Length: 130
Image 1 (cartoon, rainbow, N blue to C red):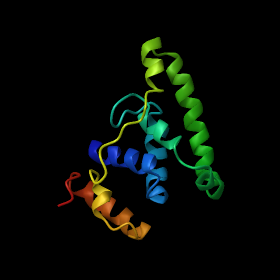
Image 2 (tube, rainbow, N blue to C red; image 1 turned 60 degrees about the vertical axis):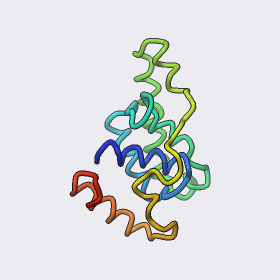
Image 3 (cartoon, rainbow, N blue to C red; image 1 turned 90 degrees about the horizontal axis):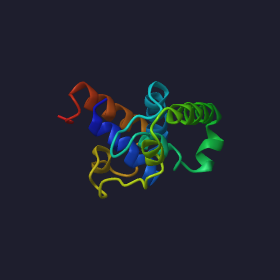
């Protein structure tokens, strides 16, 4: 998945859209690197996951366990960072303006399976959607 699509995941998390697709993909990324930076600072994708509402996690207990594991791993990883970088994790999450993400061009009622197929197509074509 390209950096552009990683940023799209962050946008979806912060805006609380397309969570059925965005959350599992974001969790896969933070499982490999809990402090992955996809837009502006180390750990911003995990911070995006922290924006996911409780009602989503209550319906997806297995995903919530992966999320908790990622939060723990990130906390341990941040301990090894210099203090100024450690505090950077708590910077405000700022994402691109509305409409500046690959998913934003799709209708809001696009079925999740179509979003996943669209995401797969973007991955196959190097992230350019063509």
